[in-house]
Image 1 (tube, helix red, strand yellow):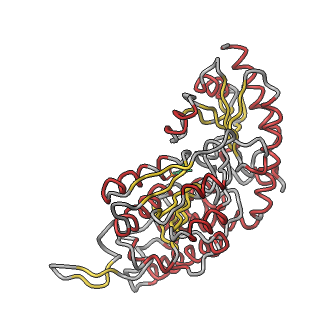
Image 2 (spheres, protein in one colour):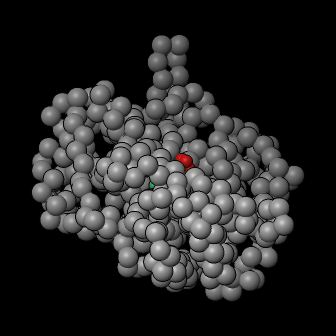
Amino acid sequence: MNVKEIKKDFPILKKKIGANDLVYLDNAATSQKPVQVIEAIKDFYENHNANVHRGIHTLSEEASDMYEDARAVVAAFLGAAHPEEIVFTRGATESLNMAAFSWGNKNLKKGDKILLTVFEHHSNLVPWQIVAKNTGAELMYIKTGAQGEIDMAEYEKNLSPEVKIVCIAHASNVFGTVLDIKEMTRKAHAVGAVVCVDGAQSAPHIPVNVQSLGCDFYAFSAHKMLGPMGVGVLYTKKNLMENMIPCQFGGGMISEVSHKSAEWASPPEKFEAGTPDVAGAIGLSAAVKYLEKIGMEEVRKHEVELNKYTIEKLQSVEGIKIIGPKDPVKRTGLVSFYSEKVHAHDIASVLNSSGVAVRSGHHCAMPLHTELGIAATVRASYYIYNDHSDIDKLVEGVKKALKMLS
Ligand SMILES: Cc1ncc(COP(=O)(O)O)c(C=O)c1O
């Protein structure tokens, strides 16, 4: 992978923060966008803009074709069996809400169990809390080991015929841990549970094939994988889609309406009420094509190497504690760490003064931080345009912060 060449495609990476070059290491929050994605969105608005599936005029047909092409590109990227299994949403959060409310409200009842890990992002936790309240189902949590790993024996202990759904992140946005979704799904299916995967931190970084994983739902956001904000995907296995109720109603999702009642269109339209973010879906499709040109195996290899380098470098800094697996292969492209003496926000602030952008806080995983007894961590997360020199600047900045503030 030629990082120097890739970097040229990202206009924002030429930006200065004060006198310093921008070093962008906040990719788990959102990635930057290459000119190919920006141009694809511009081209839609300049040359094809019309509403989809509504008009018979040329522009509407062009827009509809481009929107459906984007669906097919995403379906192929995920290895889905059918494009109709791809529902466009506003992002991973809306996708997980859709799984919770469209499937959960219809299929769960008192006595059923919803199994999650302790490190779920609020987006894969709070919707299930609400569904549990609505239906009387009970939430249960799989604990992790000291390095944020899931012990399969511990997982199996939690599985029973009462567990109807397992809701798990493919990769933790705090520990970085990558879960063995294939094995976890196999075990869940053996007790009759379906599996909902939060892929927000995996789809951008790890080759994914939903058929090989076997999972029933897979959610992610475009903006963390070079695409625009405000668009995401919920993959749902076709056989589940009929037994789900839409959670938004209106134009575009119906087949018949009378003054008293309505019937739903077939999936995916059934779950896409109102005017969709057509330009967003086209931007996502351009992002997928960009990543596929590099190759997801290459993306993964690059990030494992950066994990190795970051862990080595940070381990040599006195006073810094890394959380999550020490084995770089067991992580997605991020490393979270903390100091017992200096608050994470202060470290992030000193880093910013050197042009290094990282995230600090609880990363929308408050219950995990509470359980770990750590108020906040600093998270450095990389992507295809980061290299060793960015990590060197990170480590230099961390040392500077500790020297100044401890
Ligand atoms: C693991 C995980 N799940 C879900 C989300 C929510 O994504 P979005 O805010 O794009 O909906 C995030 C975002 O940080 C995440 O890291």
